[in-house]
Length: 133
Image (tube, rainbow, N blue to C red; front, side, top):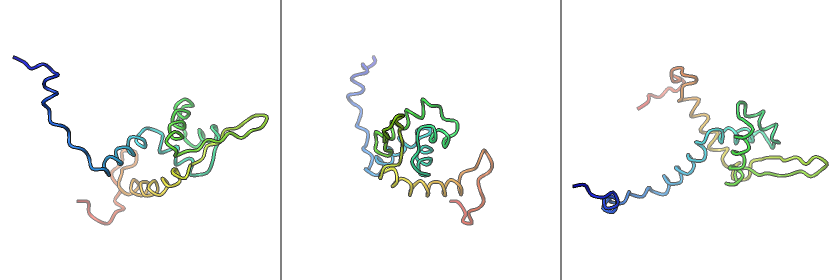
């Protein structure tokens, strides 16, 4: 005789809670692991840009995806959106103070990737003089 699904769930022990640093890391990877988000932030590190300039700095991204990702990054306060008034109003995007703070770990991540991740399927770089453990 099988136990109903509800009864099985009720007797399951609770999943252990992750330590807070791992919860924070999970949030960071959820946002930055989404395709294009990191590249958009890196593109804005070059300075403020309007939509067309931003699209040029992130080759291969569609207008729709760029609009969605910029909106998401604006919502979490990594990017600011400013509308410049005039006969033809222009919207400019820039890194917020939180977005600028991301440039420090981004630079570290880039250095790590250059040293430890293969480029385009090539073997891993031998630039590191220390053996991997």
